[in-house]
Length: 213
Image (cartoon, rainbow, N blue to C red; front, top):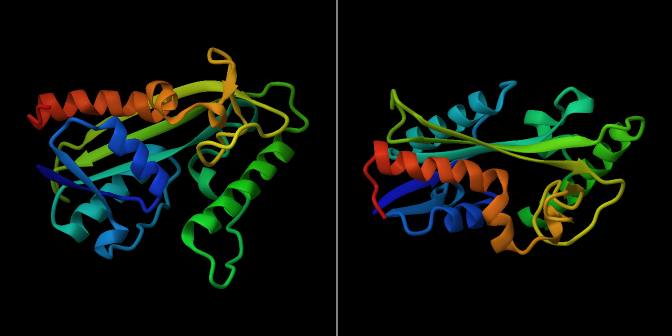
């Protein structure tokens, strides 16, 4: 069983990836559970940030690591929110005694409001989620595994649904007739950007790392 340190402390992202990689001989653990701080993400592209996060987690843990740099890209906004999707509205203030997930929910609400305000003058509301997964055997791995998945849809005028996180309540998927936040987790994991990148990564794990189910 290979331990993969996930370069994230997002519990919902961990759950999604655990489900998407189920059956492979890997054990996902968050970097936070090992006392590893989050890496800086100074770059302008998903691939650069994903690689930086994976190398940071691999170096700190002394082993294999997996990172996911994902976000929302809106054509009418020149690709924004892009790599700053998680803090598009700026970081929300800290509330004493508040746990990480509660703060994340407030951040999501602020980001959604900022997105709706930015898109208000635009008729074109097409958008896509993108997930860039990077896996490393060790911090100096010269051959990172890189998988990119995209999921297209359009941004609604108001939020719908209570599942998921981030921009899920605003992202409407025409082919499914629902927002991402209205989809059961199992259905989301069949179609999402992360499902697509994870599917590609599973094949790479088998072919390049010989991690057979």
